[in-house]
Image (cartoon, rainbow, N blue to C red; front, side, top):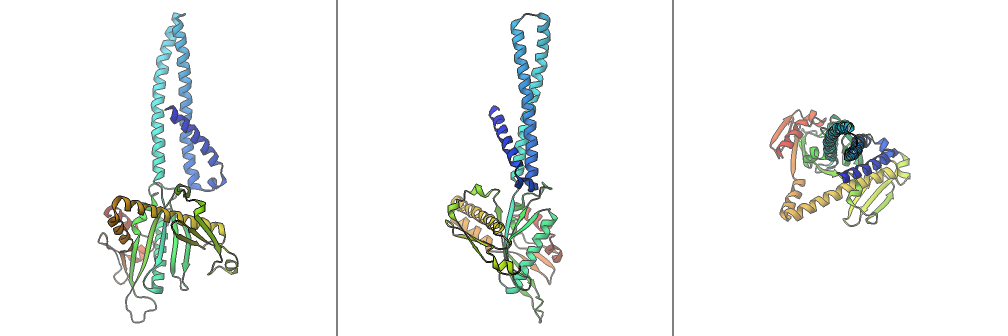
Length: 359
């Protein structure tokens, strides 16, 4: 257990340093986690100090008992020894419980995962782009109901309010612990989503079918954990295009990050400064590299056939949104739900819950 105490003291010093970092102070979720862990470590260290003091008293009493000089004192010391040993036993048992709670706290915190979602308009032209916008609003609404934070990392829009492509992060809130594993709750949304409805521009009343594809990536907790070498990354800056005024087009705020070994290229242009766009691009890159590594591991463990099945799942039609029948159908679990408009506003709980049980 002594080695555990040494590690506790080292961790405590690191926590003190981290809690003094202005970036950590401004990150409420991280600050909340570190503060709670600091309190746990302080309680362990305090109890350890008490145990050490009791051990010192026991050793002193042993010296008195060994001397055998005063019978009356010997009787008092012997009685005190029994009390001290019992108190030490209870404290050490309590310390073991504190170590277990600390371990459980670490494990529960490790279950907190953020997700990066990509929505791309598929078949259907402008109608597909409008459907992609509907899907983004649906996930944004669901995120609000879960107290998750939504951050747009990159987007490309059309002139009539549609979305060609959008990449955004869903991050768990420090307020709630019951739904902090965002990736596992949302991962079954990956695949091809299909919409059947009459577009506003359709005069004959004919139902059109359009699609949008969704990818759900786990965001690594720390980009450093992936050991991405700086020498493997090429960063280019260029002029952003689109709405935002003359400032957007005059300054090179858009960022292109290329991961040379894998050939992955990420572009981010949503924010008005290079640093924020670069951070967004690196976050997307890290998620894509993590996904690539997971796919590679699946291939090596399960064989090429299972890997091909996994790739097919990412491209198969998983859900249909049928407006004329006011119905959403998930084809994987063969279940349907009505009140489509409410679902597109973010009322996804029934679908998410069924997917968690059925897949």
